[in-house]
Image (cartoon, rainbow, N blue to C red):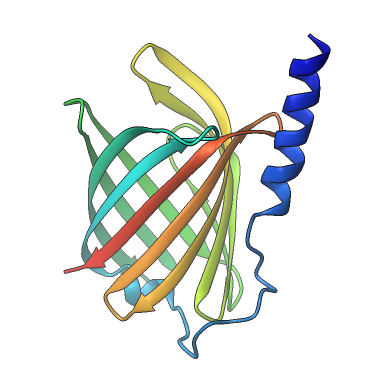
Length: 174
């Protein structure tokens, strides 16, 4: 039992120490503008990788994005390789020149985000549906604009501060 507690502590510390930061040096001179990238139709491809390394779930997401004033609406339709589907509708509001808040079904409280250079950081807690129920987890999402039509997303998922895994997504603007 002590070994398990020790491993959880070590994994938590390691998971926290490897996450990116908005203050990291920028790798490009591109400026991410969420309203420009997420306007129209986007297709995304992703996978969930457990903290121990194995990929346990893959998916495709069709996104219809619309900007109205300072509000960005994302209708996300997920198709998982096991045949299940899911829809999540996000409403994001720009509250400062580089800061966002948002909500979606299942999100606990308010999601918060910040743009910086070619990067966007997005943090939220959600009751995530699973095939046999749901689990409350926290996501720390980091998105990098790679090209005008391509963005990479690396999301770190944890429960009560304990890392569960990572989600990697590639967004392609149509």
